[in-house]
Each structure stands twice: as C-alpha cells, then as structure tokens.
Image 1: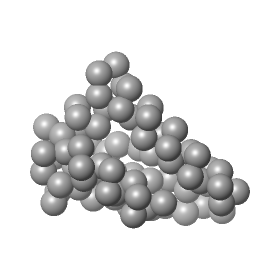
Image 2: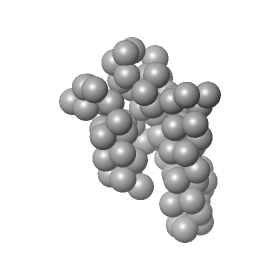
Image 3: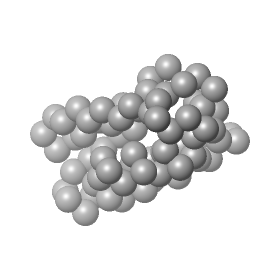
Length: 76
C-alpha cells in the first residue's frame, strides 16, 4: 500500500523528490503521514478537496482487502 500511495502522490506534485511518506502501524489501523513542500499541498488537496478524498478512498479500499483500516494525513 505504501509504495502505491507514494507513486500516486509523486505523480501529482511538482517536486516529487521532496515527498516523504511515513507509515505508523497500530494493529489493524495504519496511519500514513505525507510531508511535502508547501506549494505542493494544494495539488494534493485539489479543488474542494476532491483529490485528497479520492486518495483516501483508494487507500481505504486497498486496506480493506487486507482486513485493515488506513488513514492519510498531510503534515505541513
């Protein structure tokens, strides 16, 4: 899941080398924290939050296949 999420996020931002994705496991719940340049945050959030909602839906779907829950947080 982490590799897939990192691939998608790197395709969306202007500075893909500065994207840092960390995974915080906690039993059945996994928290992914993404850190990037301030100018790229808007590209991940998207207009009215549509992009971040789509990313979270994909992540949730992938996690449910492994009987887990996953959340995505943006660290500014």
